Length: 112
Image (tube, one colour):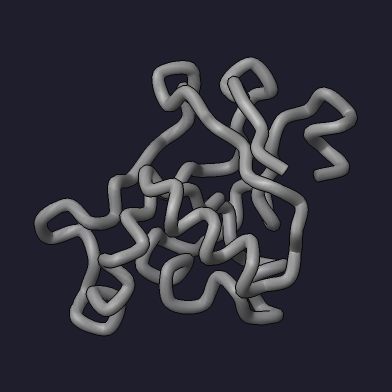
């Protein structure tokens, strides 16, 4: 939230970290993610976003992102063959993982 309020958009835990998207999906909420994870979790499903906002007691709210304005690598993790067997259990999240950052100009809405 601090980077959004500062006009910098959304920044990954570790810019240019070594993890591939499968590592992010499996371990992105662990402590080691702060040193290795260059991916940002987003979803195409508003109900999934609400679930995580409430489940993690973050209450930062939900931002709407125009993916056409995100030029960094994007991985639609529910696509065929993207996730390995261990990570397939997360398909319900309809995640779009974005590498390194999301520019402020791509944030087009906010729901508290």
